[in-house]
Length: 308
Image (cartoon, rainbow, N blue to C red; front, side, top):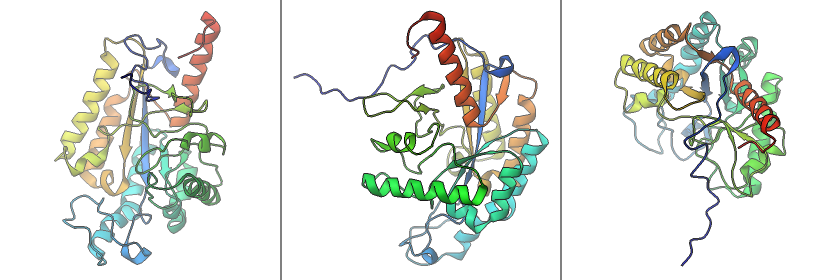
């Protein structure tokens, strides 16, 4: 019996990705992503039925009882970690993309102002730190538009992209493309931007994110700051020297309540210093997506065929 088409692309660029360079003749574009979630997490005092556990070393479990210690671990990100992270980025003259939960910005307007002041890209990470995959399409669209509008109210900037906590639903990209978003990041399937595949996808660039070069690994595979810093350096060095032709994107996920801790912050600082002078372009995600779009236009013009 013939298999039903899955509308999934398992091929991508394959063995011969496009061969171009990022601005400044860089081979690797590094996207630093600040996840602004503190205060938007699920919590008993907010009216949720359980507390979020994404605060690293606190030995908490799902419970219907308020946990002040767990809450304080999240608060570290907005009270101290964010400011340490922003100081490091300013010191290296690096701009990042901020995946912002609307409620987190509303609870700490100073963070919203600082992100704009330092010219970091503003992206949408949900109204609260929401899950979306179990929502019907209309409910999801209402939540996306609510977070978009609230983030713009806090920052004065319309968010460029949207990244869900728990993944993409069929049809979500149509919502994004029709409501002012310029690209999306809900993918882990490549080292380069691409167009979403399948008939349900509009002409909206997809800039994949990454789960390994992400400080959430401090929960599991990176027991020390040194191991995390070494992993970032190894990823960058391989992409710089990869015998596969063409450029790559390296996404680095950062959570202020984690990377803002002193030793972890030092590991990031050392990674940024190590990358200085190499064929690396640190850029907000929208700049990376736009640079890729320009190369697809140039390649299409050059050979007269559609860009992949």
